[in-house]
Amino acid sequence: MISKFVELLLGYFKAKSYWPLIQPVFSLLALYVISVVIAYQYIEWRYHFTPELATFLGSYLVKQISVAFLAFALLALVLGTKWKSGVRTEAAARISVWLRFGTRNLVLAGIIIVFATGVFLHLAPNRASHIKIMFLENPTSFNEYAFTYIVYELNHLQTDWHFTLNPDAFNRDSRTSTEIERCGTDSLCYAKLIAEAQPLIGITETGFDQDSFWINSGVVSVISAGQWKRFAPPSTYEYLSYSLIVQSTLIHLNRNCGGLPTAAFQASRHSYGDLFEFIPRRNQMKAAILAAHLSPKGQELLANCFGLEYMNTCNRLLSLDWLRSGRVRDNLKKTFEIEL
Image (cartoon, rainbow, N blue to C red; front, side):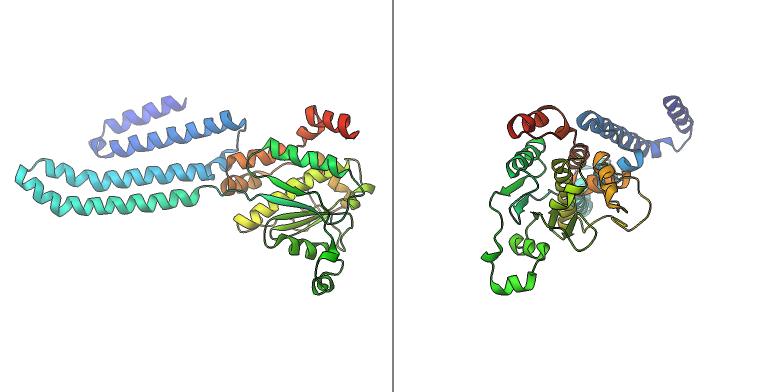
């Protein structure tokens, strides 16, 4: 039906006297639409993911295609018109025309190429930062070696970023008396000292004063493992896996993309399970872990900031299917005697 409409439209314009003037524009627009459609189909084939049309049209990929076609159109406009008039002149006159107009056109073309390249690279997605994981105290609510295995599997399942895990728990006595006095019992304060302004996730057994399972500040997050024991199931390992993915995403956004989306984690009595949504009741964290997903706005944010591969990876990891079935689940049961 769409093809018949295009044929009808094309036939209408071809009958007009101004068709030779608009034919290049029409051809360029047709090629642009074809390129966008191919890009959409490539995403479906490459990532096994069908984005919403609004999310796709707002993605960095469509913006880059638009920049490339706009630059091509401007180059054709700058280099095309004057050269045609020069072809009609005599050989001696051509040189004069080229000196007067050709050099200027080449300079304009160079400016267009440099500007378009800058915009194209600016729209390219960022690279996600690698993240260090540190035990802020010796784990008592989970098997640290089983947790280490899960961290290694997260590194194995994706290539956008990786975790490095320090097996030795943090010793507060290793800090200066001034630092200990300043931080007191504040786990986030100690995590910031360890991080030294680099991405870090700390794992602690103690809880927080506020009603929360974790706390984030810039590129540093602290997750409380001990608080989850009275809320399980899901298991502590499912909770920690989910928390690692969420905190990694927050750290990446804070470091590379100017922070969280508008209204993220804003207090509300209503929720539907989005990654960036406030959980009004602590027991609702169970549902959030079991049905974790990204909203269309969240997908658009991550895709534009880190690329479609990163967004697809987050969706896949958040589901926790890799943890609850198959090889990972069997290894946890066989080697560490852990039932999820």
